[in-house]
Image 1 (cartoon, rainbow, N blue to C red):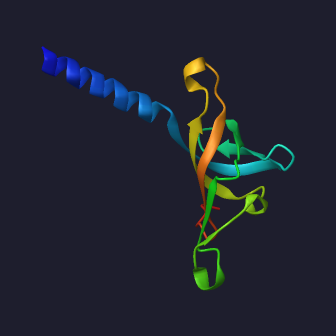
Image 2: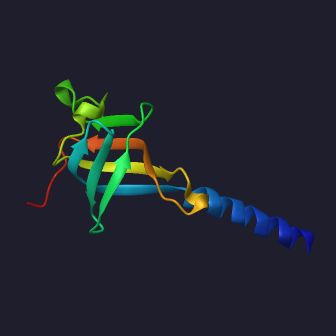
Length: 114
């Protein structure tokens, strides 16, 4: 019985930690420099406003000279750019959802369907 309780508690802890971190893919629709937010038109069909913090890591794959990877800044987040964002929600337990970017990945030479 104790063994099953331990497994149940571990499962709940893992589920809670996974629920607070998500991955978002889409194209940047607009940026707000004053609030340091971007609006992303996701591949799932909805628009999401994402907060960018000073410690958000922005990785730019194949964007440097000779296709070298480099790190970017908020200025590199331009409308029309395809991004993959690792999000977390600051107040998820309080019923509020404030998506904040933990990491943003930009692929400069991503193949497009059209």
